[in-house]
Every structure is written in structure tokens, then in C-alpha cells.
Image 1 (cartoon, helix red, strand yellow):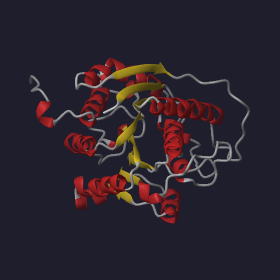
Image 2 (cartoon, one colour):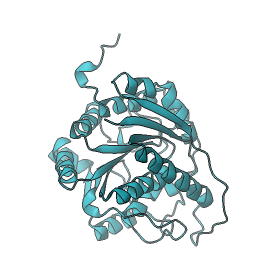
Image 3 (cartoon, helix red, strand yellow):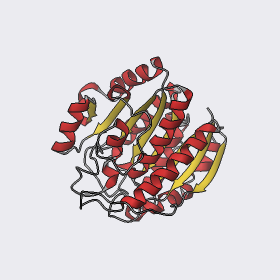
Length: 307
């Protein structure tokens, strides 16, 4: 596995509940660097990104807020992820709300295009995030990145997404909160939705393995975007958008182990951790533990805890 590069993205302008900006610090306090290093991987921490000078920008939708900030973060994130991949690293974005994926996946796509390789995406999230700045009613731009990545119209203020990712290379996994407008748009784009009903009926493993087999056959780079609300709120309360019925501890670790065994992951987002809402750091520690599974830690490596 290439060296791991940690990039802090202290972003909470993609939604209105403050706290996600503390996410990078929480991951570091929870020991993410040591957890990766102890598995034998090289790790570099590139610190936290900061906003560039912001320009004037407008949006026809009056609900949209923090557009200039979101554009600024998109710009610096795209550049930094591209830099990390260009140094043969595997960037892990320590978020920060999910609007960071506007930039992180853009940087991965630009790098993949220069390499002549397709990019695939696994979206581990309770929400589809398939609105555009034109269609969002909340105005929260953390609900738009997947639409940007898939090439939907309505992102006039943003730079064109490099090589939009086609539907057959997007795996929406664990979805359980989609509004009617998003659902209709996803059907037009023919994106397969592996929602929790699909996972309940087919199991955790089959849909993921099928997608990974296609990614391998197509020679894709693979970006994974992991939202805290992919997990059930009973084990991961530190998120402002909780939706009941998420993945369990065992299911989430199985997903991460399957991703590790595939050897396909080239970049990773960790998003929507709000330490202000956490219970003594339990969510941050669980997310770090999941990264450990993605890096090769097995279930039988986990120590017994005192009762």
C-alpha cells in the first residue's frame, strides 16, 4: 500500500450546524496516525487546509448559503488531493462536512484523467447528496457533491468537474434518506441505489463485491467517501444528520475489510464528524477503528476490553 497522507479539512460551511470544523483535531486525538502506522504503513500528516481569498459569487437560488466558502474549499481540496496522489500517496481527508467531497473527488478525478484511468466512487452515506445548488431547498451544499461528481447541471459557479463519473462507476451504499426530487434525478441518471432494504435483502457482501469486481475489471482508481451517518446513530452519535437504521459495528467493519482485501482504494474521505455531539469520543474512535480495518486490521486483532 502507498504511504498514507492525512489532510485536515476543517469545514462546516456546507451546512448550518457548527462543529464539523473540529473533526480533524478529533481524529488526531483519537490516534488515527498511530493506528495506521502500527499496521506497518508510512504516514505523513500534511496538517489542516485553510481557505484562500474568497471572490464574489452569486446564486440564483436564495436558499444557498456559504457559496463563496464552498468554492474556496473545493479549490484547495482539489489541488491538495491531486498533489497527494501525484506523490504516490493515498490521501485521507479528515473532515469536515460532506461538501469537502466537491473538492476531494474533483482532485482525484483530475489525477485519474491525467493517468488515463477511470475513477470509480463508493458513497457510504445515509443520504444521496444528489441536489444541485439550483434544486436544494435547505441551501446546505453538503447535500450536493454527488450531483457535481455525476455531472448534473446547476453548478454554474463551480469549475467544470473533470471527467464526470458515469452511473455504472458510482456505488451508493447504505442509503436510507432520499427526498423525491433527488430520487427522480437519480433515476434519470440510472444510478443504482444500494439502500438499506437492498442490503437487508441481499446482505452486506454481495452488492459490494459485485461493484468491486467491475472496478477491478475496468482498471479504475477508487475513491471512498465515508459519512458518519452511514453508521447507526446508536454507535455513532456525533453527526448532525442522524438517520435510524444504519450499519452496525460488525457490518461497517466488514465493508472496510472487503475494501482492504480488494486492494483498489486510492483515496478516502472521512466526513460529518461533529465532536460537539459525541459521547466521550466514541464516534471518533470508531471511525479511526474503521480506517484501521481499511488498512488491514482484522477482526481477530481486536483486543478484549475490560467490562
